[in-house]
Length: 481
Ligand SMILES: *Cc1c(COP(=O)(O)O)cnc(C)c1O
Ligand SMILES: [Zn+2]
Image (tube, rainbow, N blue to C red; front, top):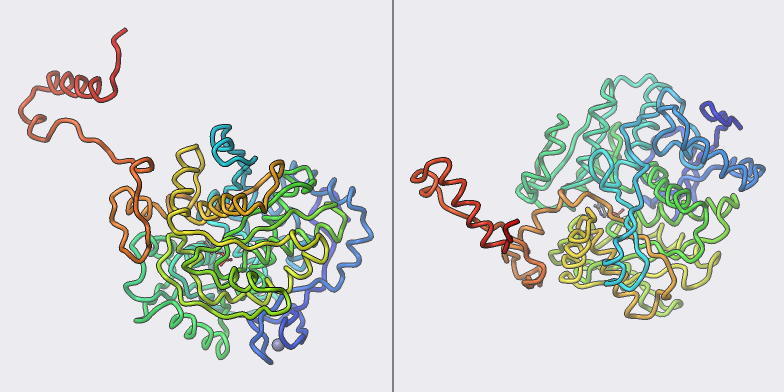
């Protein structure tokens, strides 16, 4: 093992189908299982080699790399051996992803919540969501595949209305060359805000009449019949990259996850899959002794995973749900593609650390938006899904699921700015009824106008300034000195 240079270790990654149990070599481009369409997890068949190094030694290696200066190892590939140890140094794509801070909540917020809390700010990734972790891995792998196979062109494609397309378009624009990016969006179902990121990155943006699911069927057909790389979260290379969230959190916590709970929003369930798989890997290598407890959080408007785990263990029945409008829009999914992965990993997780190591709670829309507002009014930069995590913690606490001394880390999966439209709807009282949100005065914040355009035209500059000062003194109740 190299301590300071680029890692010498190479893994033997293979696609494992979670349905029919088929295995495919990792140097082929697969999206889902060619036999049965099941989802894959990538497994390193050389993993036992990594076990020959002690946990203490691994901790030391990762800590040294954190202080190192090699560009390729500044992001998710600090944990190269655990992520995609097949990628050559020259193919690592790094745009500043990963390494996001864990920000402890202010004393006031912790008092209000009644638990020790912190947010891990994944909105501080380059395209402002955690999706960049997965894209950095998927694009590094793709770059290498193109090189090895001398492909003249490969098209990356995804169906999305939000963060996946923003991230995919950004990384594709940077890698360029034979890699071209296409984003397929449901026509009229995206705001100009959601459109601006892939358009700004220069991706080809195609609109189709219908909804997200119509777009999804088209891109999956393309992936089955043409050489296109699908970047939706069924892509198992994305899952590997997203495991870096768990590795970073463990490192930030000085490799001690005992007494810690991690709250993760569940949409398509790729992220919670990655977080659990990441912690499981760390434990297998004895890098951590204890797994943190995991809490998946869903809105009652999109809660198929919650409904599954609510049932008695031996009688569980999975059924997709019809979604209703949700402010946690990035998680508004009725039939999560990674559900088989969650079932598999939650079982392994509970086997390792006990029944209560994996939980799913669901929360009201009103709780989600107000938790986001509460967090941000106390100095955080949480998106609505981050708010969903805080709402999930309050819910879990009420149900007696979190002990008084447990430390709760909440995943703020995107930057607050991406979802400012929902904040605006709350402040202006303009939520359509489907959201079931009734704004309450204590959370509303609106600009106050002083003076008018007519005052400005009428008064001289000095008088106008004095009049504005008088107004502000009145509003703010200022005392002269
Ligand atoms: C994609 C996304 C989610 C949902 O993650 P899944 O992996 O689909 O469960 C949550 N929050 C944000 C901001 C996202 O972009
Ligand atoms: Zn299969």
